[in-house]
Length: 132
Image (tube, rainbow, N blue to C red):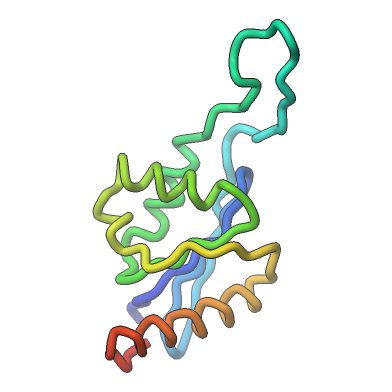
């Protein structure tokens, strides 16, 4: 059964990817290889004090949603924007399928699926496309 929509909730350490259609859903998790830790800049130290983004992690997430017709990216912080930036630079065909980026705290997979289904109904209605 083909899934036309995907939603990905992510932070800097883990992504929850849900593929779904009207009747069914499938989920997977993608974990970052490196731990993203908050660092504070100290006086006299060269550099920004920020950990580098895990590009391999973002590539795995982009690959996980590549087959979807439309993609929604959500999350509590900056990782959702870092993912989009990565996709625009390295996975442009996937980035073109993103219909929205939203701030969402820490939902369960069931809450995430309900949120995404409601979101895509609104997107499809705005486009005049009753399919969802």
